[in-house]
Length: 257
Image 1 (cartoon, rainbow, N blue to C red):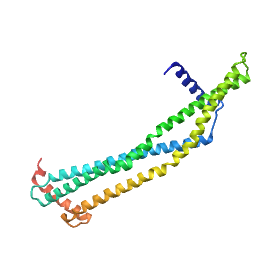
Image 2: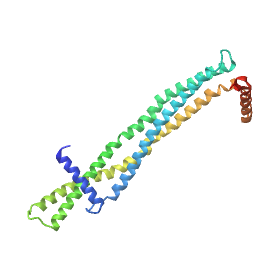
Image 3: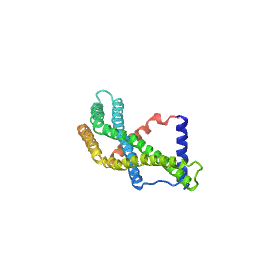
Image 4: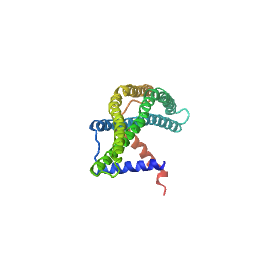
């Protein structure tokens, strides 16, 4: 940063502090401030939506990957030819198919219809935030110039050219500030109002993606039902497990000391 740039930033910081503490008249625009608040709220929501949409994709991949690992581990528990061993192989094949379907869906349709559109939408926000920062800098410069003019009016300088120069500078800064302020005040509402029409298709795609995954998972796993005994009550499963544990406790090895 050049020395002149450093001085300008320092002057702006001083002006900002003085305006916040009441030491300087501060130009306010309630309409712009409201639109700025709405935009910043949208910015935060879009950033969170993009993050959560990516999180969903990663979670589904993690879940289907864990299912496959469970199936691979279960497969190691059974001897060749054991009935449940055959069913374990079928379960492994089923969850392997689910994992591949999820990978294909998330890496193509979900990415194209959800992640990329939301990402593109969010990518414009830093540029808009930068425009608002430039607007605020011009406002600080204008307020500082106004303060300088007021001081020269209240306490005239011996140099009669100072006041006209200060007024000319203040008018130029006011024009620059008002031009950018008017543009942002006009365009920020359009950006905020565009959110529904832009994000609706992605929201629809999220729902359809979840529905497709749930249906595929149900249909695939439902085909395994025939390989397992009829469903039993919870207490029956608990009783069976307790019986097996009791048999283990009765083994002589459990009594060794």
